[in-house]
Each structure stands twice: as structure tokens, then as C-alpha cells.
Length: 226
Image 1 (tube, rainbow, N blue to C red):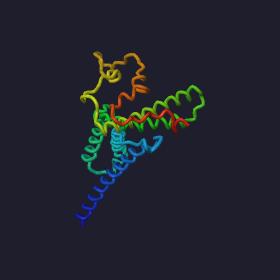
Image 2: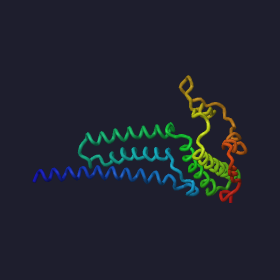
Image 3: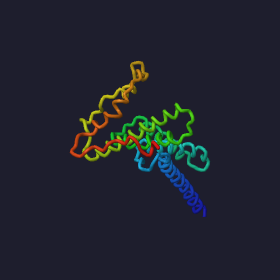
Image 4: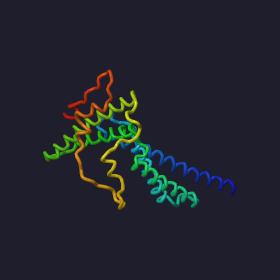
């Protein structure tokens, strides 16, 4: 009889951990999906590694918080400490991946930025703005983000069809140098420069390699502007 009760308690204990793991996994998936809830249109939903790392990072934080509140529900101290340590390590790993962008290549960058820009379009269009200066700024944001979404969709299609340009080495960028630590340990701030002309407007078609088929033109107006 005693052996039966011990076995029953062990099964209940194991069931609690299984339920806990299923709850965390469900929460991570839910948080990842909800991160796309405020894109302007469903066509702007692309898989984003950064959103995945952020959802996993929040899942690790949930493990620590929830296990802390439910500490008395689980019996073995060693198991609880091990789960806490694993969650803390996972949090730091996913935080590093989200902030370093180590796993993000050309396509992953643009797939992450399209929904990001789409959120800016939705916010800029639907916010209850009364100051004409802020409205002018919001309209400029809409115009820039719509153009950049179109550029990234064209580049994704071109890279998928024809491959990447360049030799595989990261090109020089004045913005990447701002992340490099200086001799004193602080990050270089440098002067602000206007590089918008190099990233947008008439210079963009040169980014698409010359092919026999014409390159689609970028939209100057659309449903975002109405």
C-alpha cells in the first residue's frame, strides 16, 4: 500500500513538470504569433529570427517567475535549482542572439524588417494625431516605410532567384562602426550624418542587378497614402 502511494505521488510530481513545460511552450508560441498582431497587412508577415529569440527569451523569464511563485508545488530542490539555472542561461543566450544579430543574414534581416516597417505604417496612419507637424512627420514615415518594404520585397525576390552580390564579406558601413568600442571602452558616437539619399529614392534600382526582364517600379502612392 505504501509503495502504491509513493508511486502515485511520483506520477503526480512528474505530471506537474510536464504541465509546466507544456504551459511554457504554449506561451512562447503564443507570444511569437502575437508579435505580428499589429502589422499593417497580412502580406507583411515574414518569419523573424529576432522575434523568435525575443519570444524564447520571454519564455525563459516566465520559467523563473512562475517557478518562483510555485516553488512549494515542486518537491525536489535539486530539480528546481537546475530548472532555474537552465532558464537563466537560456535567457542570456537568447538575449545575446537578439542583440548581437549573429544569426541574421541578408534575407533574415529583410524578413524581420518588413513586419517592423509595417507596424510603423499602421501606427503612423491610425494614431490620433492633431498637431500638423507631427502629422507631417507621420506621413513622411509612411512614405519611407512603404518604399522600404517594396525595396526589401524586390531584393528578397532577386536574391532568391539570382543569388547575392558581393564576395560574402560585409560591406563597410558608417553605422556599424558606431557599435565598435573605443580605446576607453565606450562606444563611438560620431557625428550624425544624412545617408538617406544613399538608401532610398533614385539610387535603389542600382541595387538590383541588371537582367533582361525589367525591374518593377516602386510604388509612389497606394492604399497607405489614402
